[in-house]
Length: 406
Image 1: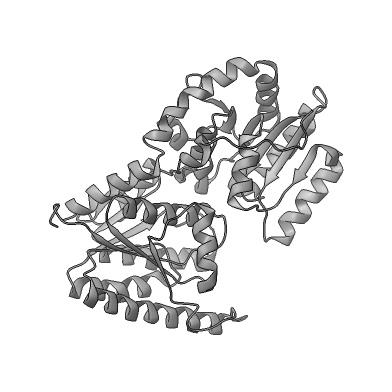
Image 2 (image 1 turned 180 degrees about the vertical axis):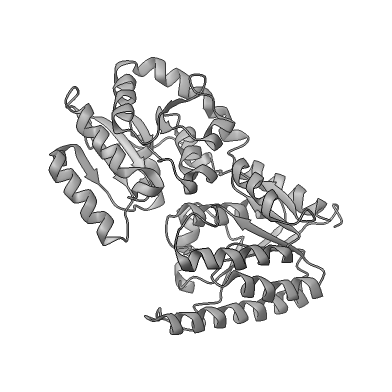
């Protein structure tokens, strides 16, 4: 690929762009970074969103006019089918609709890189786009942010076998963590180039002054951002920790910015809150607009994340860490090989042992009792906001990688 020319990048995703998810944020910030660096990025979305919602989606992370969005799903059907057959039919219709749009765009303005995430029926969908990429000499790149086997079931195990077969179609694979990169080196062909891009964010969101929230001003505010999931982020561990901390320091408020679709998970959380008698110490905000999300983080006294030990977290690197760092607020997270690749316990971060509400509570108490010292330690991680965890820095790295794909 000629390094003197700008690259045309087609990003194909199924993530729901109108939700405040880490995967959504990553895709949009990549596209924004590519565009700001002078390259042409288009996002082809298979999610069921409306064209008129695009301005709102862009405003959630301050996107400019570029990158452009093309909606394959929305042009086919307006409602999600309620059965597997119907949803499968619509999915493949949207795949072929995307293919038509790609062919049209290729004819008008050559595509250099086809960048796709993970899809249902991956061996089939990746092969369809492979044929298009191969025919037109387009670099074909796959991104994966989680271990392919983290969800255990017969169907997922079977799907994982076919998924591995699909990797042969790609020129390169982009992974979110060092451990995931090492794993893919064991399952992908040596001809396929492996490249690690950690989570990142736009520091301008957090560097700018944020208005104060006139809420819980007399409380020590502990803010958590993310899904209300024990498996993913240890929400039950954090709630149990709060029940321990409040016995010594009652002047605390745990604010959760996120939600869950699982009725079972919600019931379990509500029962735990009731059994621990901590309702007055908890505030579940649900998912908030991006502006309010950042505002609550910036107004926190400390930020928290208690990821448990499991396959999913062993190979993932949380997006929230980059945002926590950008706020310059003290933050407490549990130990993980991928976090410790960038941050050192006691030097620029303070880590808690995973899977223990008691240990997590002890660390929160340590934060309260040694607040100024803790601030000085965690503030040292802030330099990463302009390097490893910066969206434009990582977009530039990825562009350089694209140029060098064989």
